[in-house]
Length: 489
Image (cartoon, rainbow, N blue to C red; front, side, top):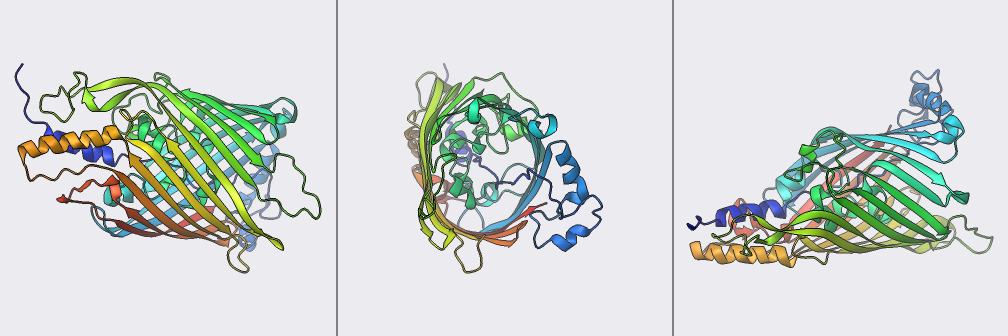
């Protein structure tokens, strides 16, 4: 067999693509009204909502009476727009600012209010994503700067039905198109920060096909939640192994509208055990003081699809070798384990809304021959009501750390070895880890409008990849600043 031409250039191109694969996250939480807002803007509405802007939870109040009419048939509607400008002042492949935005719309039908049938909830949600992606264009980071960054599109997000069963609603079952970042591996306190990794964490995002069923993607499946005692819940779900029918290329492009509903993949199984204090239905008696609540979660996932080896081909040769057949060795299945904690550590006795909470999360992927990321960690502190007369404001600081697997690092070493054979002076860095810190403040302008200045600093972006604009050097550390606006209509 004739020897193939050197594959070092192609290997280097793959290195850069793999290093900046887009991460998935959860967008800012959205509040779905469960009752009509009488007084904000009744059916006679007109422009009456203008007189209630200071007290309404929604910019458009009762939507000119629409919310009242929908409520009569058990329907709730929420629309939220998130707009932000983020930019890097230092480092990255280039400096500069970009705008990106997300409009979420959620429609829910409560079967108790609609038909007198207890415990049912139908949910449909859509996304309109616009603007540019700073992380892909400027930063080239693994842990992307914003949880709303995604390909521009108008797409279906979730479409499911949830039914509560058993006395005290101890069991509920959800079936349909679901985004797992809404329920699994969740750090509620992390949602106050902007970086992607405080939502859907790095290990599933980088390792699962298509980034997994998480914003802006979802997958068909069924989820069970069982509460054997008030303080403990067991969450388990089985979903299609990929959010797209074709795992080649960008999952958002192969399923741009979110309506393909693939069932041709393997299965993705999630199991999570949750412990919460105070327990559901717990009573607080006079003189006890407000409890310091906490929630702990442990869990894991298994995906039965086939995964490419990161370092070796089907003949056992390094993929970076000129003699490689270019076909990665295949592995059946992949799994990960995780632990999540949210803990309130202080609360002011005479101002119970003023409190400090800490949070942390670690996710580990043991099978390093098929996973880009082996470890991902997040931690932070959240201070509620930090300033006098600002009860709805929040100050938060957090950090994220991710480590590249030995398989991915081994591929980099092979690229460096064969690259040196072609050009002894070539620069072929070996990826290691990436760390960022973030400081943010949520300023509640009105109940329906929130402004959020944000600062992030990234150490060793891309885990140490070469700068494509200066291939003889790694990407420089990045200082990212920006402002986000959330408006609830």
